[in-house]
Length: 126
Image 1 (spheres, helix red, strand yellow):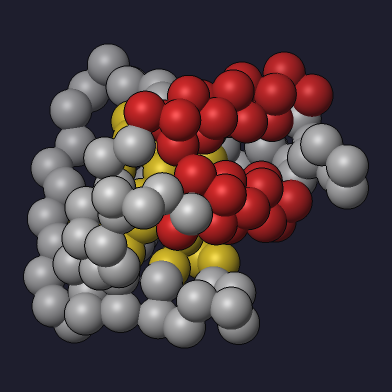
Image 2 (cartoon, rainbow, N blue to C red):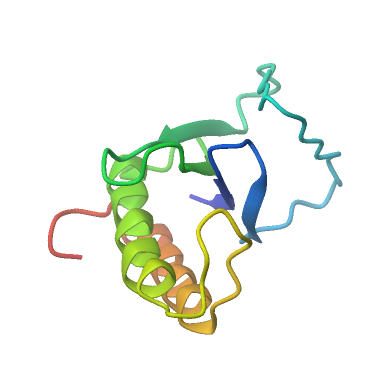
């Protein structure tokens, strides 16, 4: 199982965080425009896009690109929201709508992705 990328998009449609967890051999062009138009075509059933939006932070979207066989993506999105709340929003040097540049956020996101890939699921209490 694999989790390819994690993106955080602000309410204006700007990309404020991108992490490529697994880089495939063939490079894929990534383009973003406002408003965020995502049109994905099924190609060998290799990528699944999951959107997550929590009521606490209106307009912030968490996007995970993962293998369709990866289970627990919804739990992973909840964990990413929790990490964002704990390490980005509580950081006194972080401003809303600005790119996330926080080392603790990066470290905790990477460990959450490792756990999700190894376990295949991300349940409560993880």
